[in-house]
Length: 476
Image (tube, rainbow, N blue to C red; front, side, top):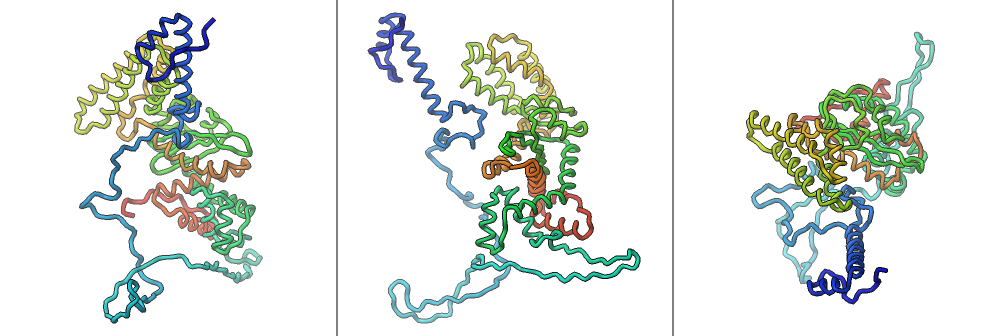
């Protein structure tokens, strides 16, 4: 029978004499003390994490603020640019549209009379008018007889979609607010109905956005094709709710595009829907097993995920005494590879020599028999992806992490927190199409609203959508 009380309190201040006193009370006292210490340690760990299910892989946005470590030091960096560097501020307006003159009647400090002088100074301010009046345009459309077609014809109206009373700029602006900035439909309606004096309805907005997605769908297909033809492509996925059910938001990105797809599968069926042809570039991803089904020329697995897995094992998996030796070797191997990647002025012969030594060290690590269960699990992963760990050392344009895809999918995750997903499959398709187009235009340096508005007007005039604009130049 293990005793259930102990005369000596268990705390971080336990002295050696108190520990010996516990041992002197017998085997049951020692067992009881160890169990109590384990319980205290578990409670402290849960309180520090804030959530017993949180792991090092948990994104920062999913952790409660009170559970995050205070990483700020006592000495904070002074805000602003360093002394001697040019300042940064918005450019002044090109010209003034209104003028006001200000002159004090009396001294604002003592109330005394003032002697008028000729000295003045100017100051410019920009503001929004108190009442913004929408521009209502009445279109007179002439219908003329075509003797060749034997019917009456009329020119297209390019200011709005057919049978729509709302203009193209309003259409694209509301879609940009919802699908690019994450504003909810109720927020958009409140701003337009009460501040911009344009009456909108939720149903009307949704129908307009669906029609817009149908028009610009060729751009969505063009983004997919450009992604499949790219030299390096990053991939990531996250949960997405559609009509109360959990689906998956897939993101395929590189520096010039972001392609989103919402699918019921988190496995190879979704990937096969995107990879309609063999990918001849380098696919950068985490270790999610579904990516193994993709036929591609080369792969680069995210080494940051591998380091994060080591941290997770040490904090939450209670590894054996054999684990530290394995973790130390793997960390050093990854660290040496990253340092070689970042080194400059390294000759090609030296780089190739160090690259071969890294491969030999990886092979030796995989060939070693490890007694720890977690080490054997990671050895299986290293063996499966041995040829995809150091691709970044052979291709300078390939990173060693999947940070680009995680940054690309993050705005969509923020939108998900505001909108809670979609209510229908059709809405999910519109979400993926318009998010892809807006984020791609932003990456390429284009004004998303103006570019899409001009494209819609061109489509209404010629019945053909122009091609997706390419990347702008650095000075453009």
